[in-house]
Amino acid sequence: MLTRRCAVLGSPIAHSLSPVIHRAAYRSLGLDWEYTAHEVAEESLPAFVAGLGPEWRGLSLTMPLKRVALDVATTASDVARTVGAANTLVRRDDGGWDADNTDVPGVVATLRAASGGPVDGASTPGPVCLWGGGATASSVLAALAFLESGPVHVHVRSAARAGGALAVAAALGHPAEPAPWAVLPACADAGVTVTTAPSGAMDELASSLVVGLGGGVSGRVLFDVVYDPWPTPVAAAWQAAGGVVASGLELLVHQAVGQVHLMTGSDVPADLLRSAALAAIGARA
Image (cartoon, rainbow, N blue to C red):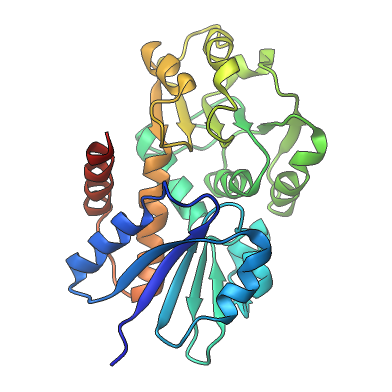
């Protein structure tokens, strides 16, 4: 009997906590499965996937592979097609691959937990400030549409970078518009701020972002998708000012819950995966 294999692919990949999280899930489920990490560049993904044997069951995909993943998939879920990105590939019985996106429900779960309830326009009035326009930003916009949040300002260094993300919002009928890479007066009204920019990209705005919220950040949610290193300067400033902060670790955990279900057919509690991730982070430190 073949030992089932799964892996996380991306570039860079050495920092990934996915192996720790998925292996903890397998132990909990009593599965003798393997989960590894592989450095795979965008142009190398088709050949890598084509070379996998029948023992392979699933792949987790991180940057920069989330968009090109759709090109190697046989089928794709509605959410993956709408977002234009997949973070999961699951092997079909016929040898093909099904693409899915568990980032979207992962963002929904993360924002609901951080806010302590709904994140809709009624319970969290004002716009949402979203920083970054890549594949993760597209998933965030899809999640905000599902949550029926307020209108979204997508802050990018150039309007062209927001094109894909804004197209997702338009397809889902959710109000969103591009905004410059600067703290605007409208940011002061935001009940939720989400940063999807890479580590370090928001550092120069940390102080001005918090100061720009004229009424203070108390009770307001910041979701920063970075989890290593943590806290980011933005998260540290926000928390010091009394705001609510959710890290990318929460997204990593919640999207992994979905991936484990897709790959194994079984469910694991988020707390189990979170504990495994925190233990790994502690060991690194």
